[in-house]
Length: 286
Image (cartoon, rainbow, N blue to C red; front, side, top):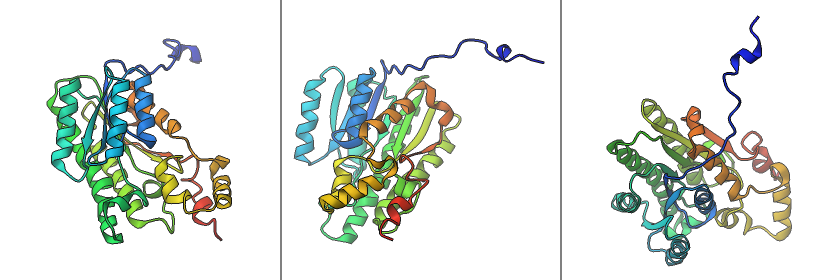
C-alpha cells in the first residue's frame, strides 16, 4: 500500500501574488470595481494603464489626479467603447507607454441608470447598452488578443471580463432586459474566446459580481428606494450586506496571477450566493 507521503514531492507552496514586471490594462478604471482593481494591482507590483470615458470631464480629472499620484506606475487613456478607432488607440498608447501588455481587466460598462447619459429614450439606451457592454467588451478583448499574438512574449496573458449575476448566471424578473442580455453576451464571449485560445498562453475568464457597493448599483437600485426600503433590501441579500468592490478586486488579483491557469474559460459566480438563490431579490415582493 502506497503511503500518502509518497505523493508529496515537495511541501505545499504558500501563495504570494507578485505582479512586478507585468502591465495591466484596466478599462473603466476610474471608479467602482475598476478602480478597486487598479488599486489592488498597483499594490501587488503591476504597472497599470487605465481608461476613462472619453468626453467625460469628471472622469478625465479623476484620471489625471490618479496619474499624478502614481507617475511611475500608472498611465491614463480616454476610451470610447463605441469606436473601434478609440479602442485601438487606447491599447496602442498603453503599449507605447509600457511595452507589452500582460493583463486585460475588461470592466468598463454602463448600468440601467448610468446608460441614460447616452440616449434620451429607452430604445436608444438599450442600443447603447449593447454597444458599450457587449460589443465594446468584445472589441477590446479581440484587439488585446491580436496584440498579444503579435508580441513575442512567453509570459502568460490574462483576459478578465466582467459579466454580472444578472445575465451571466441567473435571470431576475423586472430587471432591465438589455442590461442582462448585454452581460449574458460577455459570459458567452468568454467561453468562446477561451475555447479558441486553449493552445496559447492566453487565459480567459469572466467575473459575475452580485449586488456590489458601487455608484452604478446605487443609482440603478438603491437611490429609488426610501431609507427604510434600502435597509430591508440590504438585509435580504446573502450575508445581509452588499459586496465591496475590493472583494471583487481580490478575485481579479488571483485571476491575474500565475495560479489561475487551470480556471481558463471559467465564468465565475461572485455574487456571494445570489446566483444560487436568486429569489432573495426576484421574489422579494411576493
